[in-house]
Image (tube, rainbow, N blue to C red):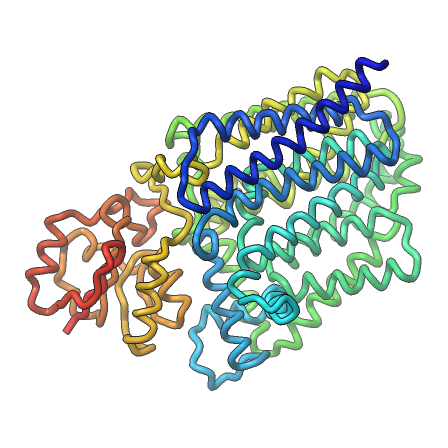
Length: 575
């Protein structure tokens, strides 16, 4: 007993010491100092193992619950900071569009006046302004620039998502070990940490998505119902696709409410009957669907003429191919790192379904209807996510899967905990290692570069690129046609410029065919374009790289003049 007690104390102390070391590692990265890559792996491995040990050896006390939950949230925050903290400006590229909405609302108010000189994409994003308004409010309260708030607000929001996720599992399963372990695995998901570290509308919408399900999982008094309605309003003003997914989720709950009684006579479902009658998700399904659908559709109708544009945007997001979707084959034929991580996730999914099927068919003890709900919902979303690369090519499957994968994790974790074989729970260490493998090494060690040969690219902007964009905004009129890659579109274009990046003419220019150069006023070249230029559909077609021969042609062409060069970005004026 004493040996076990001191082992837990040692694990706690070790965890906090290595958390400090991890933060130091990020600070070194921020200063441009790269430590040996082994330092990163040793630190995160120790953090994973010590926290898993504490969860598996959990003693059930309230003090231990709070301590371990704190450590889980710390791990979640640490993984998010890996993406947000070390680099200049906002992480990744899409956030610059959402930040353009912050700037537009700050200047013109909301709703944006129709006469305001704002390009269509920024205007469309501004129809879901909650994230942007929160950014402005935090900026005013804290007295810091809105760009700093935009950099770190996603870390706060996603850490709160972790807490709601924990209490949702706790309410549904009444098992602290399952709640702690399931939450820990959830926050370690590569795509969850990577995607929800971004300053995009989905990050805030996902928080309220989980918050709504958490509220539905508990007994509802008047105050809870009020918070529930506020949460629906919040997700309505956050993101259109999340609204659609929430409506589908509530519809499935209602269908289960009416279909399950017809199936309850079947032997495999008989053990779920008692929990079905007591489950709060099922009990409130009719009212849930009514409120969610009414609130969301009411806002879309309020928008007026934009309502049909909402449906158009949804149709475009779901079915039109763009640069934003890798085909599934890409993940399994890319670098060794991607192959290992991708197959690791597939193997874990197979393991998940095997455990869940065993639990449903052979499992003993009290049955939770939540297992059926999450198996149906999670299985539907995960399957759709993988198939989406074929029939919903615009949706990045790794984004869509986050609405289903975590719910499968909940069910399989509850099933594993119920087996009362702690050694099986340690298998999650292997799963978490697979998640870490998926993190591009250049993000945590500057001696590595993006895998350009596989169509990858740098997920953050350099200070020189921000300076080039600032120069461009100051010297170039708004309505000029600009040829550039997707990255230029996201940085330069989000500052109110029409950067044409997807046209075949732009692809040909980057390949060295300058016949249609005269259709543009400006050309932007980035140093990365000489390794892999994100033009056309770079996630579908082979990568295009600007050659030295193409650069020589540009320099010799009398129609074009280089007017800006800071070693990272070249701006050419086309006469």
